[in-house]
Structures are given as structure tokens and as C-alpha cells.
Image 1 (cartoon, rainbow, N blue to C red):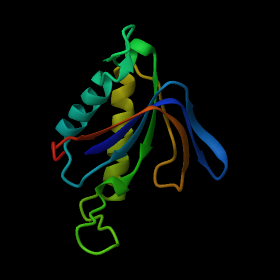
Image 2 (spheres, helix red, strand yellow; image 1 turned 90 degrees about the horizontal axis):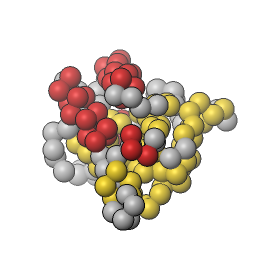
Image 3 (cartoon, one colour; image 1 turned 135 degrees about the vertical axis):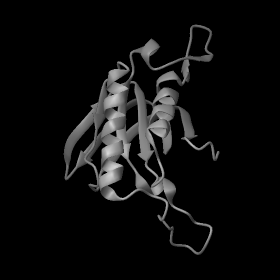
Image 4 (tube, helix red, strand yellow; image 1 turned 120 degrees about the horizontal axis):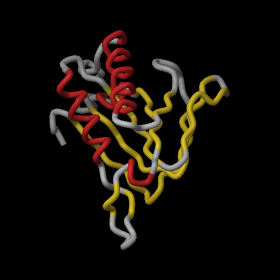
Length: 149
């Protein structure tokens, strides 16, 4: 499982012009599910998102997590994070989970983050979405449950 986590001052997602999810300060989490992912991958990534300390404390150091700043999460499915460009110019998505599995894991991640006490907004799974955000910092973090990077 992979995630791109962006610290934002605000973000929203639209489908067909309608806003489906909107947050103020927090994270936009772009989430990709791999075929081989397990419950352990989900738990690992949720714990990393929950514990990530990239908000400034009173000394200006990135030392605070999402809960400390009462931040929110905009969770967006993005299978293209498994796009493999090592051969040719068209990415291969052979590692990406099939639609049904990916949607189940995506919804499980939303639920897991909510049980950790976070407000989680979403887009629409497998839809063409327009994501608008103000990346604060900018701060962007990559996380891979298999620790490939």
C-alpha cells in the first residue's frame, strides 16, 4: 500500500462539478492499494498517517501530528501510484489491486482513520475527480507499507 501525504491549509474534491469532500487544515492522502496488501499493510499505513509529525510547534519545528492541530483528512483513491515506468512511456499498473479489492481496502482505511479519531472526507471511488489543494510548506511525504522507499 502506498500513500502520498500532503500537508494542506485547505482542500476539496469535486466530481462532475459537485464538491464531495472538503477540509481545512490537515492532510490530503492519495492512497493506492497493491494486489498483495494485507490487514497489516493497512494498519501500518494508518499508524503512519496518524502519527506523522509535520505541523510546526511553538518553536517552528515540525513536531506536531494531525490530532495536535485538530486537522482533517481528505482521502482520495489513486491507483496510479503503482504506475511502473521502467519500460516504455506508458505506465504499467500490474501491481495495482483489482477494483473490488481496492475499494474495500480504501473504505477500510477511511473507517480505520475515523476510529483513530480523525474527521475523514472522501471523493468517489473510481470516478474522475478534480482535487484542489493548497499544499502548506510545501510538505509532501511518501509512505510505502513494504518500505520500498
